Amino acid sequence: MAQWKLIRNGADYDALSRQYGVDPVLLRIMRNRGVTEDAQIEEYLHGDASVCDITEGFLDMEKAVAWLNTVKAEGRKLRIIGDYDIDGVCSTAILYKGFSAYGIQADYAIPHRVLDGYGINVNLVEKAYEDGVDTVVTCDNGISAYEALERAAELGMTVIVTDHHDIRRENVGGSETEMLPTAHALINPKREGNSYPFREMCGAYVAYKLVARLLRFAEEDSELKEELRVLAAFATIGDVMPLVGENRTLVKYGLRHIKNCANVGLQALIDATGFREKDIKAHSIGFVLGPCINAKGRLESAEQSLELLLCNDEATVREMAGELVQTNEVRKSLTEAGVKRAIELVRSQYADDKIIVVHLEDCHESIAGIIAGKVREAFYRPTWVLTDGQEGIKGSGRSIDAYDMHKGLCECADLLTNYGGHKLAAGVSLPKDNLDAFRKRLNELADLTEEDLTEVVRIDVDLPFGYANEDFLDELSMLEPFGKDNEKPVFAQRNVTFVRGKIFGARSNVVAFTVEDTNGRKHVLKFFGDIPEFNRYVDGKYGEGSAEKIYAGNGDAVLSVIYSPELNTYNGQTEVQLILRDFS
Image: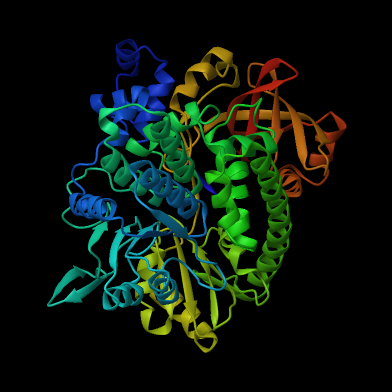
């Protein structure tokens, strides 16, 4: 089971509460997220979206703009080459709309996940050359495309790279050196020498920065500026970027404007998923809207997802949005089957491995990353899911905080055909004969302790259920959007008696527990987790039949719980809902 850890950061929270006019519990939570300085607190509570349009400090930004002005003045043909995931699709849409507004003749190409693989490649470069393209601008890719960009240079093409992925480094002359591809301009917030203070932005936000500088968004407000900010925010959530600092300010803006922005396709998707009359939060994009954009690129081609964001015909986008929702349903079914198979394999063959490498031969390669994420959650181990490709095997990995997945790949580079990604998520391809060696080396070199491989649930505050009323939750919403590195607050209540349990839901997978606190007050805890596991735990702690007593309405098992409170609106009525997250 996970280890519980109550975060204790001392401060005069009552004084801070008076200074900032918010509940002291909110200041505790913010401090737990590392938000401690006055400027940080002000940004966290009242971040100004004008920061989105600051572009000074990026290496090669002015060089790229100067060349784009040449492209415009001389009528040269430009092609945008994006990628097939939500970040790549939104990046391409942002650049296409921005360039078009600036008067640059541009078209675009999205690589096919199976036929082309990730990002720009030699075939896409040569096709662009054959089509008379003079300049290529990449987005959400390119920083590791050494061969493709070398070929573009041989053909006399000009390449501008906009990307956010980690940059490969090699030991040259005794020091770590960036290995950069050949390009006219390389815009990446992670480059050494950048003075821009924020690094952890997605590819779409990097693309937005280029357009913001090109169109001088800092000097004007426009409908296009709002729309492109929303797309950058949408991709920031979908690409699971840290919701801190500038990203959080961008996403707050995006969520506030998403239902009113000028993107007709995005509005159609909101309607198709039933969110027109619901609040759209980061979770809504991460788990419903975003996966619909991703689904086409996973199972077919991402071009329709891009067309949805570029099309202005309402009838056409309604049809497109419906197709994306249906494709996502197919993707979910395939994912559920893949997760089940992967977990069975781990339990039977790889239960002792620190780094899990699962080979699912006929799994659709596009869902390997999602399956890897689910397996990582089940075992709390860095996980690779690989499948058979056209040449060798390929797949995706998802990691834990203690393990740098990209560094692990660099240590196996001689076994691999291609690789790239981040600390917590990466992609790889390799010859099938190297699979066992890959698994073995990853595990041999993984310096992970049992402590590293034990999930830690960090509790923000010991908070009585009764404190979480509507007024408190209204204030708590100021801390949204929640996501990576700004997780939803987690509270604990000790010595809770589980009196009654009622199972419901279409698949009988939800329980409403009636519980009693130490003051004798009754509350309802909803549980969406593993019901059999809960029952086994209660029976193990209090004896066989103890869980059954709860469902019979005369339970007496006393547990400590971790929970999250939220406001639930149904049929016009709003009530506080307490969600059970863990128990002990």
